[in-house]
Length: 510
Ligand code: NOJ
Image 1 (cartoon, protein in one colour):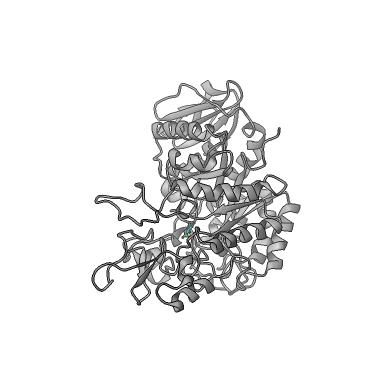
Image 2 (cartoon, rainbow, N blue to C red):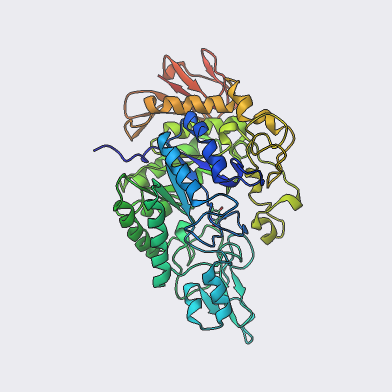
């Protein structure tokens, strides 16, 4: 039996609002993305994940949806979505769409009706609605915090409060409600019928809440178990959705946006659930050999129990740029490491260019995290600045000349552009292209067990199985001799000599 297409796929996260602006309104859109698909094909990725493009008031950059089965007019039309899917397929690229089923926009007709209907009304049963506490109901129903900062409850002003694990404009749905469950299935089928190859389930672990709504214990900290995260009941929902995915031809993928260690993400990978669940912990592993070796082993073991492989996340629109978290050299070293490991890899748009995190001024920031945290957390927009395609002038090929991007691009952005890097064989883009081109021959489909080889301090060296190429990672500060690991240097993330791999670099050796 051949493996499904996604088992070791490299998926490019096309953050649609910042990828390419076709009509010049400053917001990336589907026609813009469609025009740039040949770039993704030539980059060598297998698939693209398109972030939400549904109608949205944009309180959370499209993750607040008013209609899941339509396209925001600023981003295009359903015909444009069909065009993206068709062109991608012609170019050999798979398409994954992003389904935000945990919550809707506060402007969604269901929530508008719930607000208007008043306490106890059946319209409110689609949401998590509770009376306030205290004599006048002025205290939130529980002490749950919003993931974006502040309380997770907002009052309707009539004695009842609604739950929102994210922004107050993103009320959480009750998936126990038959209409909510039926609508989610209709959305899933709608996009599968249009030919998408997979779906990402946003906020995957949040879909089930403890119906007793217990308070969090004293001393609870983010990341600790919570009555609204990764509950056993949530897996019944994924089993249901997995049956829908399996009823379509062509190995349709379900990928869970999970946040947690191996024990949290592995249950989503049971044979009757999903094919992939994001491994986010590696985003924060320091560049040291020991945490990577132990972490890789733990993820391989936990996913392997279900016959699956890890899904390595190199970056995303929710975290700081890879070049900022690991440094520019480290980001490339980690990419080559992830591409050699058994499993799938998610590469965030712009990280192939080594884009830095951008420091935005307070008034330029749109992310609700900034406002809800009282400015303590500057939010995620620094990783979302529209891409530079060509050298000057602004908007650097992101959109037509004269267009003003929704987040400002810094001066000199064009020096990092696709056009400039395409001419430079030592650029991050050139290294990424070379790595993706070689991965198919050297790593993909090799044995799924790792054999660790002896390595100098703060280095990792492994093979897949007993034979074949070695991946050597030098997390240390000094160059290391690569010759004990192979006769031929296939590729390195930084310029290597005939003997030495520089500090903070990865080499593939045969
Ligand atoms: C995860 C998405 O990736 C993030 O951008 C969003 O803010 C939350 N889910 C809420 O939908």
